[in-house]
Length: 382
Image (cartoon, rainbow, N blue to C red; front, side):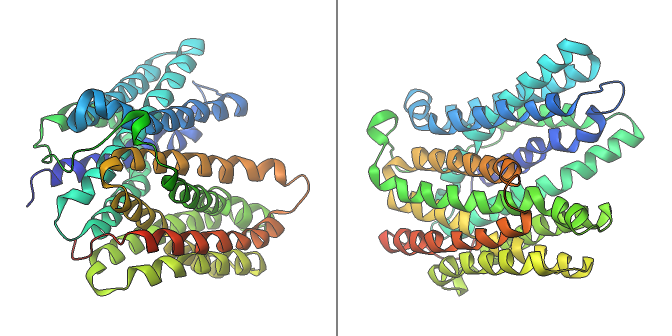
């Protein structure tokens, strides 16, 4: 096993587990003894998104000051601090609890931005001929942890107390920097000297993709359970199948990376997303929604990790800055897809918005063609 593999993929596992905690705690925080209102609960997400964007965009500059390993430790420390603040919120009440939760989401966002920029860049260097597969599987690990962490949290909530899970995650983040670190890769530039105009098409591709992902992921439950008047459990299962389909696709395509023509798959992915946007509003039964959202997740599976891999391959001396830019673009797009569709429904129904969202395939295909033509990442087994 290559040096640093456990550290990089372990960080992905912890990052996915930690990042989903506030959404997973939604039902608990809105009941006694916490009694957070809808407005206060919604406010918790803004520091998280802002912290992730700022940290990801600053990754290149911080790299020049602290080095790759120092940047990784900063991300781990921010995540550990976030878990400590969440543990403190368990024992607090009133304004102090809200302040601790806001601090938690801010530090978690910063940790997410720094850690994801670092580990996506490092994954491209782990294996001599498998940059694309390594990045794809890394993001599959993050997605799998995101899906499983709420189940672990619920188990601790019923058996002991929910605070046990963030406490364990905090300890794991503190221990992570003591594992073997990956060897240094290609010397990099950071700060203003690392910014390139050629990075923008990759960032645009990720931002538009994230709008599509947020439209599927954040509104699946509403579309199924509210708009089509099906059971709440049906909406929750459709959402789970969306994330499950994405995770399975990333594991599968990452594992067979050597046997597929990745550029063709990269170009086909937006067409699959468009087909799901067009078909889903016309469905009626719960079973059809399950299949459709599972396929939507699979269609979304490779576009982000492939863009990350192509972007870093085309900017090897600015790889961390490129990775940070794409993580920031992902968070901006997720915010638009998740929150922007709410006000838009004052004028258009969610079904119409979904059908119009199929048009995102046009710029996504054009950007995939442009980005994959520039520099092909290395292939091979992950």
